[in-house]
Image: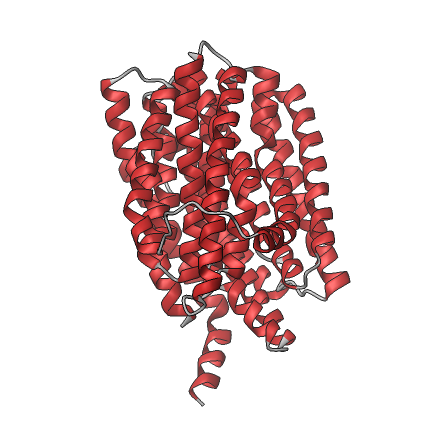
Length: 475
């Protein structure tokens, strides 16, 4: 069942981040750096607004949505949900008004507030109803809600920027339209109740009690992920943020996509094993997940250090190429370190319900990364800021693994890690010897040669272990 569900979710889980990855590159050919900075500030503001307005209730829905057989309970939930969603829309309008007033640049207030409100509200509803679709195993509705915004905005945004003024406001309007279309298409498949009645107070209180701690952890995670954008904008302005965000986002999204390939099914599987009292099996599952995570993230991070310049030269607009080339390799390093601790040691802390320990990890990460990035920004500009982020994320990875091991007994797969590092080193040696140019054929040659070398090295180093594993399974 787990594999079947994972495969059904896979198209949405791949298409959405890939569309976002393409969008980072595409918008560089239309938006000036200052407009890219404004667009970035709005998108990260939306994330924190969603957590406060609706995210806490989405977490409750994912965990406690009544089954279809419980008609009375489901009716109480739907009535409460309608009120919460309506309240979140009104809150989005207020946040949009404040954002339109505070954003840098000559943004027309009323038009800006209207577009931002539409963007914030539709994005929040997409995210919330996608979580409810997961709780209902409504795969089609989930896919529509996850894909419509990022994928639809590629087409609508391209048309809007081509035929209208190339500004962040026009692009945000295209995103709002695509997200709204996703809601219209998906909601009929979720069993909605359109009447607005009094919410269930007991259910609402339970949602607040359950979602509150999770909301706090989510806010800490948001700060750790996005503080650098506000720091750069405050220190150097929206144009510098726009220049930085391309390399930063490309690196972070490459790391996130690579991690997602192997981490989708690990958490629910480990949770089920732990609920059955099979703690050792759950630990083994997370240890295997750590091995797979490293096996994907390490070669991708290493290869981009060599292939990154060719990738940037082929895809990114000239105005952004120099800064993007300087930051891409460092950004994926920082993103890989963060994904490693989030999906291994931090994940184990969640399973063990050690939320206080996880909050300490997030707090340490925020302080370390913020101080290191601020120092780097003062000493070496944008490159120094990203170096500081990478150093803070690596230090947090080490601390998270240390606490998970000493306090919870989590075991990191050191032997497998050494083999993966050796395979990655062999791949890098080959890439260093190849004459890789900055054209499409050179990039393709480097990617294929690197992948083949890494696969061959892994087969050589892990061959005996895999042979023993499959022999035991056969017996």
